[in-house]
Amino acid sequence: MKTTHANSYCKLAHLFCALGLLALFPRAHADVISDWNDTAIRVIKSVNPNPIFASRSLAMTHVAQFDAVNAVVGCYEPYAAHLSAPGASAEAAAAQAAYHVLVNLYPSQLFTLDAALAGSLSAMPDGTAKTDGIALGNEAAGVILALRANDGSTATVRYTPGSGPGVWVPTPPAFAPAVLPQWRYVTPWTMTAPEQFRPGPPLALESASYTADFNEIKALGALNSSTRTPEQTDIALFHNSEAPGFTLSSAARFAVAAHPLRLVDSARLFALLNMAVADALISVWDAKFTYNFWRPVTAIRAADTDGNPATDPDPAWLPLAATPPHPEYPAAHTIISAAGATVLASVFGDEFTFTISSPALPGKPRTYARFSDFPGESSLARIAAGFHWRNSTVVAGKMGAAIGRQALAKYLRDIEPPTIIGVVPSVKELWPPNHRLVPVTVAVIATDNCDPAPTAEIIEVTSSEALTGRGDFAASDWEITGPLSVNLRSERSPIGSGRVYTLTVRCTDAFGNSSVECVRVICPHDQRGRRNKAKL
Figure 1: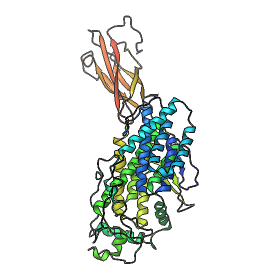
Figure 2 (figure 1 turned 45 degrees about the horizontal axis):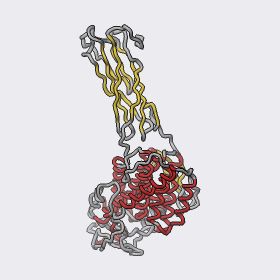
Figure 3 (figure 1 turned 90 degrees about the vertical axis):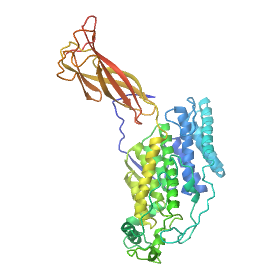
Figure 4 (figure 1 turned 60 degrees about the horizontal axis):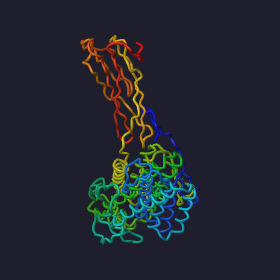
């Protein structure tokens, strides 16, 4: 628990980091949370790289890690495992929690996971703290595994495509059936229900907006487009080469390496990031299989059936890349990117320059000046690839941002207010009572488990006497001049023991929790036996 002057502010420096997604790109070491994120993604890709299943696995892994680490530190509210082990090793707990989840989800990777766990634990000194941490990690992981055992992810849901204008059907070249239709019913992590952020319906086929989107993608997203620039082609192929959930985890790992966080804050970041990504997929699957809107390749080939005279068919039209096998509206890549970028920006600030490399385009990395630039480019990528109408990406971006904001606002929160250790005025006694305003500043010492720099301000001043001891009410007897400064009038009634000003100070942490404390400044009736008076 760090002690800090509450009127100081913690400022993040502008950062630059390079993010590499190439298999041989050197790993930047940050902490045990980042290490196990990297391990988890490598294990997932080796077994089933489907990003939808991966989102569930990563959320389970990191929520278990967070609850384990938080049980040691006691900083934030837990997600599911209400545990307390203040003497345990948080690092051992985090490693063991990740291992326990992953070995249950991917038992075929036991050898790889055993080696990763041995590597993590070997860096920690033996002893009771380590042993307790291992037990804690197993317990936290067990809670999450039980929680998600019947979340609907393995349910069998029959789905029969419809037909007619505007309705999704399997698309060329594979004409594969819709993938994982049950995902629209999976239990969310931070949403109240899969349909919480369900948008309104897609654009009407006869509308001018649909016509504009149709003509845009018909030209820009075609396999042999004459209007798509080389950079737009690179952007489309770049974003099609890697699931955005994996990319966002890579961004988080390198951000933590460049700007280290406390272990509990790193665990919280990865848990919130991956819960937001997982919920984005649940939310978008709910919308996709609610509206079952057709893909551009179907719409353009069958434009003569859409009832819109401004859309011309092209029976041979193909997109730049193969269309994913699920309904079009809204755009999955964009909702995931927006949800994840919202979480990352909340920790590091939106202005954060990072560069991503892709094996699909060697020697052509993409650089972003802001986290919010990533979902914006993802939207362009899906249009240029010929997968999504522009309206679908706009709607998805709003959905993803809302999901990210809600996760941040309602989960893994700091719910404890700062502890105010002391409030000390620069002047404790006003003398002589000459009716003058005296400047007084207040020093506040406070601690907070989760915020190293809570802020403080004077919110109220009261007096034990009526305004102005002289009774003329000519001016206020006090005025707050700054967050921790006030002018107090050196005055008191000629009768009585003197005047007492009470200054109320509020201390607030980054999560909005606040506590108050009062301090008194007096103007005595006389000076008999008194010291520490103000020199006026």
